Image (cartoon, rainbow, N blue to C red; front, side, top):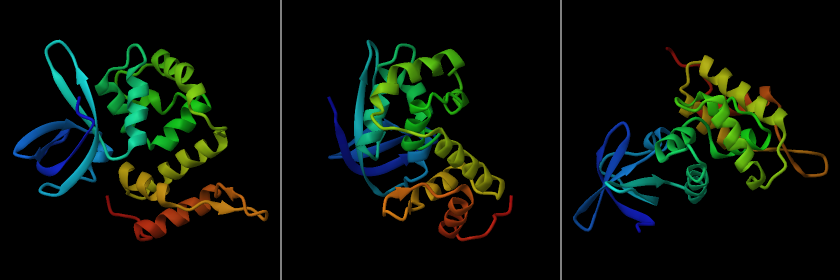
Length: 200
């Protein structure tokens, strides 16, 4: 089984890459978020999930190990296939998805084509205990509101998400890390993005 691959991107499409290593080109399915970070003719290292069926062998690639682990947790749920799991990963960051599942918020999951409310609830039930952290719904809603605010200024979902991921945590008087309020989070994200609304 292929666990990782390092090589040159020789072809980039809307859904997959061809990564060439040692003279062999491997077709690797990736999420839209990962795809946006890829450039043709560049070198790449991906963690790989090898999905074997009776008539096919498909490769799914991830830049980070935690993405691979989350993907594998999703496909172990009855009714969730590799393509559905990849689509879920394309909706929001891993941290946001963990928060959504940890707080029982199915709204992120139902944005995916083919994921209905019952399937979303099933994902929450099966993975909630595996998230392993105490999560607050208020911070999740704040992140969603910040994302929508940045999108309304003309930034794409990927641009907004990447900027919000880079926003540093605040600190309380005791020195503990805390979530910034939504307005501060948006201001910090705009600094990262360049500080100006984009034309549509």
